[in-house]
Image: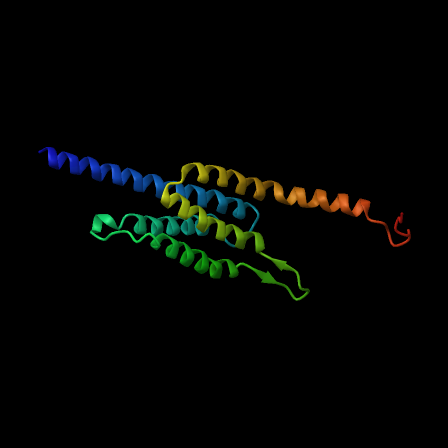
Length: 170
């Protein structure tokens, strides 16, 4: 009886861990994707949530091979991480567009897809402090980045000499 109870408790603990890690992955990815949706970008909430969920699931598979009787290879997580980050680059490349005038768009969305994969790996591994800090910084860059770019642009344009004035020399 105690063996069955212990097994049931271990399974419920494992299920809670899986739900928390995968659930947070979906929330983080959804948050990133919602930002992209609100800016009218092609990859939004569903895409980002699926990227983080997929990366978290792949990470959990590698970290939890021992229940299946296989010892975890220390370099396995490194190989999975390399595969995820390389493969996700192709998905990100799909949102980058160059128009006939040479203007490139979609770079921020591509970068957000890539960072969503990294966040998925972190969620799968359960690195809670790093997930929290990274999520905050990513959202800060996405929400404040454009305003900071415009401010810096105005400051540099104001301080640049016009073509009518000779540059100041000393």
